[in-house]
Amino acid sequence: MTPPRKVILIVDDEAPILRFLRAALGDAGFDAVEARSGADALKLAAARKPDVVLLDLGLPDMDGLKVLTELRRWTAAPVIVLSARGEESDKIAGLDSGADDYLTKPFGIEELLARVRVALRHAEAAGREPDPVYEHGDLRIDLAARRVWTGKKEVHLSPKQYDLLALLVRRAGRVVGQGQIMKEIWGSAAETTPESLRLLVHQLRHRVERDPVRPRHLKTEPGVGYRLEAPDPGAG
Image (cartoon, rainbow, N blue to C red; front, side):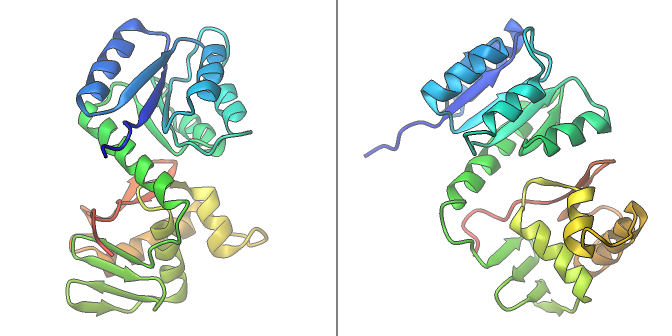
């Protein structure tokens, strides 16, 4: 039996964007529903229970962050913010309000579809026991055994390096904000700085990346945080 198509709710008041996304998502095998205002978005989200929400922040009746806050009161459906607001503060505000990802307009449709697929995998995995093994390219991490390999070589990390890597593995494919990382790694009462985190990331990249200057696994979202690339499909 063919599984039902995933429903993607597009929230945007620009007709060309809606047409573009509706066609691209349809070609990719999704059912797209559209809302041109925040009020309509909340009604459609309740009625259709979308699998992913694509949310513009500049809506005619309310700020998109308010829509996001309202959605997070009752649904855990992944929300990907699509916005012309490219300032770091806007990205941080979106992630802190409960967004799972953030793309700045203009964006490529292949990148958007990749982010949607990652969001769907995360939503599906949320109802299962987490896979203790992460694999992406030559990087393999066994969370249960607390062991890390690049290719066939085992990598030995300091406790904080491992804690950072494990934190990013548990949220692989998603941006994790600097503040959240520092709180979880050093503790809420610890006096630390973004420079301490940058140093830790620098050290970790030199342990797990073949080319730390052009990292394949551990990516920086400038001014916002860090993202560990999603695991390879079928790995683990």
